[in-house]
Length: 365
Image (cartoon, rainbow, N blue to C red; front, side, top):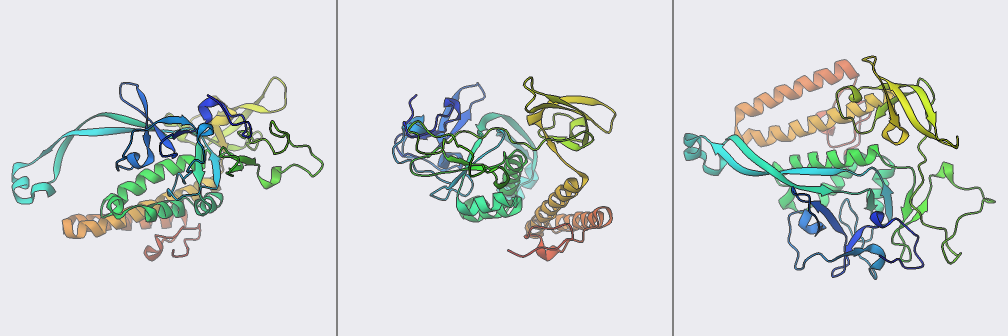
C-alpha cells in the first residue's frame, strides 16, 4: 500500500477503500461466515452497479469522487471521526399467514410468524464524509434535522408509505451513535488532501507563536488523525458509558476515581459508581460526561421521535384498519400526558417535524 508523498501518513486500516473503476467510496460488508468483501454505496441502498468493486486505498485513486456519507451529495467538504459501529441484518426466509386472511387480502394478509437467518453485517468505519449542508447540522448536533435532510434526498421508492418509518428508525440508530461518539474537531477535504487537513475546535486552536507540524515537504500542516481531546472529568461528575452492554451501564454513573497514564499527562481511565451501588472501571474513551440536563434533552428528543413515528403510523393505519388507528391515537395521548407530567414539556402535534426544545417549541421546517 503506497501513499502520495503530498498526503499525510495515515494507518492503512484507516484509509478508506475506493473503487479503481468508478473512483467512488466502497462499503465493507462481512458475511455470516466471516468473509469480508466490498460493495458500492449504491448497492448498499439496494440499487445495482454495472461493475464489480475493485478496492484500492483512497491515496492510490487519481481525482477520487468523494460523496457525502449522509445525503450522498457530490463534493464532500469535511471528515468527522467517531467510534466504529456495525449493523447486523437478518434475512426473512419464510412467513406464515392465515389461509382465510390470505384469501381475502392476498399480499396484504397479516403475518402470523416469521423465520429469519443471519445476513451480512455492515461495517461503517470511523470516518464519515459530510457535505457543507450536513456538516452544518452535525456542528449544531441537530440529529432530527440531519435525518430529515437525508430522507428528503432519498428516492421516493425508499421513503414511500410505511418505508419512511423504518428508514428514519435505522438512520436514528446509526446517527445517534455517530453524534454520541464524535471526536472534537474535523478535517477539511481539499484536492491535495483527500484524507483531510485536520482543524481542531476553536478553543484548541494553536496560538500564533505555536509551531505546527508540517508534511513531508515542509509546506502544509500535517493532516493526521486527531488525537484524543475529550474533556476531562473530575470526581463526582456524572458520566455515561458510550456503548452500554447491560442494564447497569444504561444508568447514569458518578465518577469516583480517576486514573492517569504512566507519563501523567492524560487521563486513561475512570471508575464509575452506578445507582445500584456497583462500581466499574472503564478506559477514558468508553465514557462521556453527562448530567441530568443532558438526560432530559435526550428524553425530549426520544419522545419527539416516538410521537412522530406514532403519528405517521396512525395515518397509515387509518386506511388499513380503523380500530388499529384508534389504538395508536390512544398511545399518542398516553405519551403526550406522560411527557407533560414527568418532563414538563407540552408537545404541539403540529410541530412534530421540527426539533423540540425543553420548552416544547420549535420551528417548522
